[in-house]
Image (cartoon, rainbow, N blue to C red; front, top):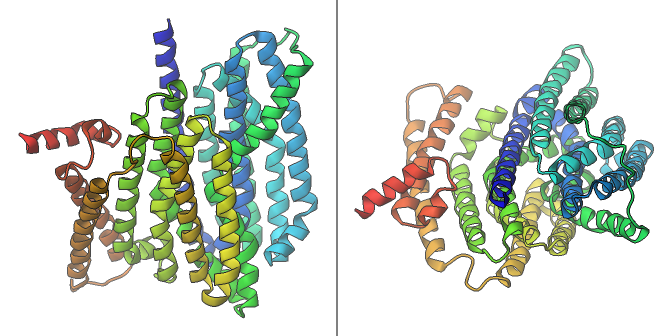
Length: 521
């Protein structure tokens, strides 16, 4: 019976991981056509306000559902379970009303702090998302606590599909009707709200189908109530903040970058410069999505068996190898990728620096997932706080000197600092080094070989006597991705950087094992 329960639980964790992977990829990709529709200034407008919606997503998808599910899973008694649901709903209702009030009534003040009064409309629009927080979070937490992962997974996928479709349609429709880019940005935020309502509709449908008997009086002792509320207030917040890493770094830029650029003399050009700088966010998201999804899959395994540390070494190795490959490959084809996705190659230096941060972002997210999987929620919280403070201080120091290049350097240093601290916390728990020197050297060799071949490929194709427009750059970039990935993976396998168990973490892992065995034979 226990074996069957464990299999069901692991299957559910896998479903959640796949849903998270899909939504993260879609979340990164839709920004590209959106930027093509609204331009650099329109992209700046959206990216300034997006962190607020990103915070809502983190709270309602990864933060509080996880916290609530842990409370429910600890005690299967129906009276306790429904008491947790009720208390969680009350707690999150208070939190959601508070956050809605801050954003809606403080929109003008927040927009002024961001350096652009016209953002107030978008902030007020996105504030309504927080009113859905208790409904989506409690529903997902209730299902996950009972081992039912499908409702959460389906609601995530539906939310993202409706959201992305609505954002692209409304922004395009409003601009074609003569509305301003700010009004198109508000339309994009309405599209995000439509996605959230779609997710809630899915969860309600699952609730109605389940026909849960809620007539049982939800009662627990007062002492237990205090424990539940304290857990939600402390652990819930720390879990949420640790899962908002990328969004919180963007939030620092939202409040500091534009005012600092304006003070440096860029004035109206500051908005365009910020929009170009924001092109780096899809690159960072796409570069880290695989490592992040692997980390999310790792957490439940560690929670079940803390003495089993092999998964930790595997996760770190895979994150390092994926991160290194993503950085080197992207830097080599960055010009072509920038033209393919955003029509031109402005902001090359900023995007190159942000691309390098992918390695440290991947490792930091993996270390945070490991610490959370081992039951440590306060150290990840500390890591994120230090990173935000470092980013804020470095922006103030570097942006007046180097403008958006300074902001990119500040982002890179902030991720390096977070990575170093998180690495230290994880390494303290381990009996041997997380990454051996031989693995680091062999990975660098594989990346160097990939870089040599990619640079040679770009030089040769640039000599072709055809028009070097967007289509040509797109073909260069797409073919370059396949060439780079093929060379890098073959080099990693040939150098035996990863064990056979590690290779199974990759797509076509069994095929890679056969290649490795053929070489050994």
